[in-house]
Amino acid sequence: MGADGVSPAQSEPTAMTVAQASATPRVTAVMVTYNSKATLARALAGLRRVCDAGLCEAVVVDNASSDGTAEALRAEQSWLRVVTPGANLGFGRGNNRGLVHANREYVLLINPDADLGPDALREMVAFLDANPKVGIVGPAIREPGHPDQPAFRFPTPGTVVRAALGRFGGDRGQLGEPIEPRRYRVDWLCGAVLLVRRSLLQRLQGFDPRFFLYFEETDLCRRALAAGYETWVLGDVVAGHLGGASSRTVQRPMWDGCIAEHYFKSRYYYLTKHYGRLRAVAAELGELGLLTVVGALRRVCGKPAKGRVKLRWTAPILEMPDPIEDEPPLPEPAHPEETAAEV
Image (cartoon, rainbow, N blue to C red):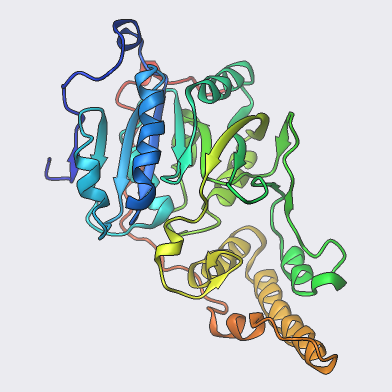
């Protein structure tokens, strides 16, 4: 292992055929792990299939796991590159460290609890090839025992307030819409499986490192749109996902399946970044007030309390993630002749 915590893929032979090995992959898969050992074997088996099919090379960044994830990854160094920054950098910064080693035309961002087959990846690559104005594409994501992951509209200060109103808020501020079995444009998609142009990531300098967890993919899709690129979902292409596997290892208060501390800090930062501090403050305080009023009305009507009011008041209020001062810039790919030209 080098001094920078990077373990290069070794030269031992893999199960690839000679024909597959002779093809230059057009995709770099980047995976970030944190205490992911429970799902790692399944995730690596899926990633190995697409690598052995000659479709991609793999980089895995381990965010200082304490459950043996890093050791399990090092056993797979014959076919993937392992990056160990030595600290938990969060999802966005962890991916950025992996992007340093992404030198192919496309980057597959994939969670350690997700599974994408070779045919699905081929479909996604072919779609980006045929649609130069699409910068980000994702599949339909299927979770066992749960509805498929939806596609989303961008959150706004208004949707935060309407969600606090519950059934009195019209659309209730809900941003997710069930993915239809067709191909169409959306605002943003779950970051569990995304295929992104490497040139676009270079232009955007990857994820905003200040998002430790949550809203980083929302922000990425929004910045891609501002740069002239669209996000699409391929509803006829399916990936598997266990959903929140790493979050479930953390014993912290949860809000709608998310770690409350990181969720509310990231949301406030997102709203401030894209709508200004005044509207972000108004949304946060409006949510708190409405949740309190709705909770009081439930008690008056003799309905059981849901506990959301207390949780919201004890979660971060008007707080952002700490600024990141030392994040290195994303370098140009090492083999620029193998990456796509800017559209």
